[in-house]
Length: 101
Image 1: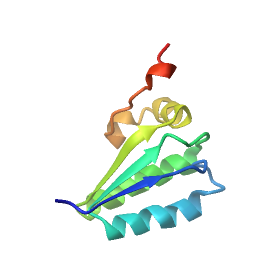
Image 2: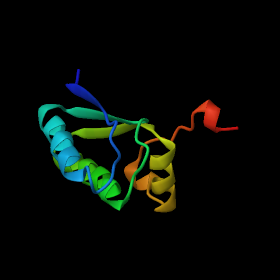
Image 3: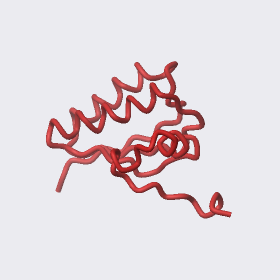
């Protein structure tokens, strides 16, 4: 059974938090075989945040580990869709029922 760590980010995925979040995410990846990233509470994301997600995915792949985004906020989905990176990131973009209307 893989060593799994779940991280829920509540801060925005923006340039203002990127350095702190980078350290936290890479530390989690160093300590676990699989990192589950819950982004459902992220209210804002910019290209620095997107670069951070790409970095995490790339570092996980290089280490033979997994980084999985298990929940996306509307802000995160919007940026991923706008940049057409859903296939690259490889995680299902589930739209909560209350947002589907």
